[in-house]
Image (tube, rainbow, N blue to C red):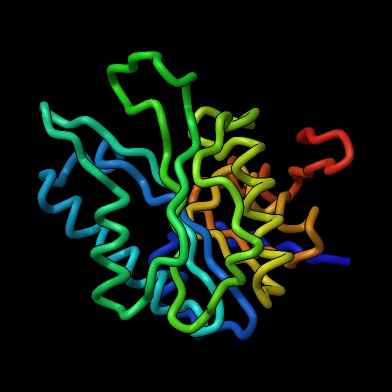
Length: 219
């Protein structure tokens, strides 16, 4: 039976104190600049790259680090978070295994506050993938979310399937885990899960959320 543990504390503090856990992989969605009113855009970009680098540094060489990120438009500037993730990975010597796009709105629809797609990037130091097991690079639908900032069901299913079938991961670690969508997905694919979330309300939900694979629904 897969296990789940959720720590209600600051993710960076937890990561800084954490040693590398064997057979683990990480997934993170780093917070937007809107959650850092004290930062300029340049300061937030530096924070993002440093935090992504910290997460990469805690991933075993044979594991993977995944980032689920949506770009933002800030004072007329398009901020490409996929680029920021790759900056951090290059600095740490991690290679990009794949980069997928998942639609937040149907193709051909204009969006204004936020782009109509999200990035899902996968990095590793040493893991090599079997190209015969490649999956689509563009996913048409994010899927049902448990809360506004949550990962969609289809994204969680794709990542859970990838980790269980193409890596040696036994534990998924999810800093900034929110309400625990990816933790529930990891458990559904028989992986242990560790989440870090500083909001007590969200941390409680993250401990309880379940994913029904047969019905493809949250419980």
